[in-house]
Image 1 (cartoon, rainbow, N blue to C red):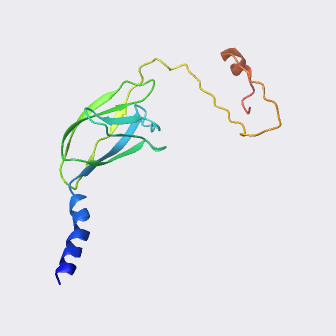
Image 2: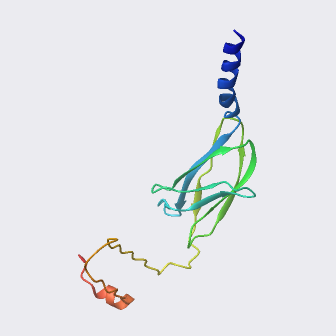
Image 3: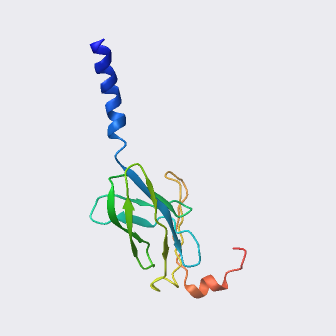
Amino acid sequence: MRLLLIAALLLATPCVLAQDTGKIVGTVMDDTGTPLPGANVLLDETNKGAATNLDGEYVIPDVPPGTYEVTASFVGFESRTRSVVLTVETEATQDFVLESDGSVDDLCVCCGYRPIISNDIYAPTVLTGEEIARLPVGW
């Protein structure tokens, strides 16, 4: 009987310990309402944070109860910091709207990928803004 009681206590311990945290969730968007995928959301003064998914959503799990300063940032946008109060076993929601800082308004980033192994030879091509403007619309 004692063995059964000890086994029950040992199995219940991880469940009890796992219930003393909460999570912080939300979205990060620009001032037009467009999600910002890959934005960073960090709990200041901690090592916890997350990056947003394609819909601009983030989740920071396993956060101990307390008051936190949460900062959202994305390249080309002004960072925003908000205060969040989290209690045990809860989910605090904090959304962010970031405004452009004007540093990359005229920037166009193009990415290309090639197979890891290929028999073809690739030569990179660099186009100026004027050359891109002259390209046909369907290109």
